[in-house]
Length: 255
Image (cartoon, rainbow, N blue to C red):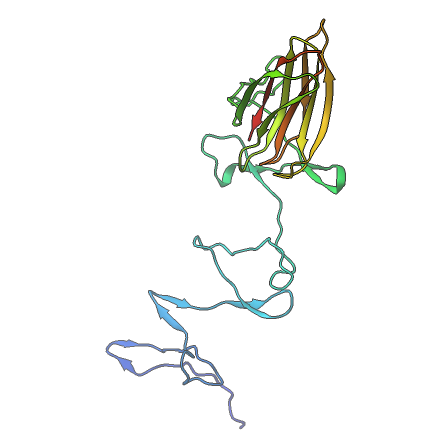
């Protein structure tokens, strides 16, 4: 009679009244080496989970502090050539939004210059659409810029002589929304000029105006910004036949 191929149960020696089998998870190639045995504490087996990345390289799988698998959506040519991506899901309007209210997906449309623009719907705090019957309230706030208002009187300017009214833009600021006014009781030529660079002493004439007996005042408006340290000038030339006082004012916003 041939030998009978039977399977016998494993049983340990008696340990008091308890008989048990203890199993160790070890490295088969080096079972006695340092750190080659799985650790168990608090009835938990501690395992470092490794898997292949998209390049086939072994990487340790990490978790967040809440136990969720971490994902990285930032592209890096070396460490993350195939970043994680997922659709955005938003919550229903609810006083206490949680996972059960995460039911809605936003939409988008392809815009100009190859951009993708996410759709939005402008509503008030009660969820009502902004329209003619429910307009958006707008309030005028204080300007964050410094208001510049510089006045100059040039006394007894001789015939064909020029008096300059200069304003230097403050450090680390730009001057915008520039306006200037000039006047004289007699005839005058008035020029709005801007220095080409800080302390260059060279000026570009932006505008030139002449007053008259019927219109003794002139006004300038310049909408480009002027850089820090640059001089804005009103050049006032007496075109009358005798000396006269010439007046000017430079206004703008420094920010």
